[in-house]
Amino acid sequence: MAKLVKSIYTGSDVTSLGEITSSDTIEDDLIFADNTALKFGTNSDAVIQYDETTDDRLEITGTTVYVQKNAVSTVTAENDGSFDLATGNYFTCTPTGAIDLTFTNETAGQTGTILLVNTTPQVVTVAADVFLSDADLTTINVAGTYLMSYYSPTELTYTYPQPQPSQKARKES
Image: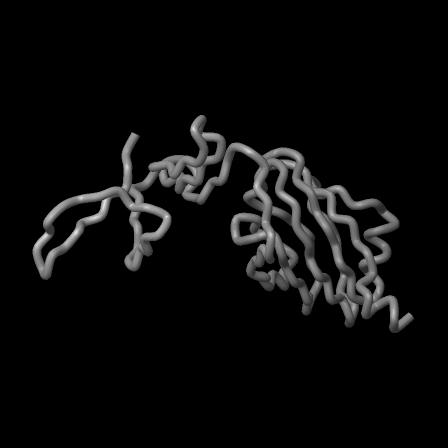
């Protein structure tokens, strides 16, 4: 098992090496090679790894991950109704013409939200692999603002958006 070591200086000369302890401060970047894991726990109970080879993403695996502050994501505008899920999980859509709701680059288990602002209103249809009830499709074709959640149960397959009037839309009605 590799250990982090520090150089101990006397003046400008390294006089010895020692292990980094909890009282040490790392003042520069630590760079890990692609596909190298940072493991936590005696039995490698949790792992953080950048997967360059397969997915080109940061992966956190092992035990349950708790976020104690905020997990923030970028909101992407996709006004044409085509949502590339590789760009993120949160979208806005303010169509200026008819749109067909489509999703690409789904990952199994991916969820997110879309704020649909259809104030004109524009005609909204759905692609064949998008499941939306006729009643919900009728709802989002009426002028309004809708918060839609989606869930992709498998890769490259079905997405189930569920529209709900946003708080603002509820107050206006």
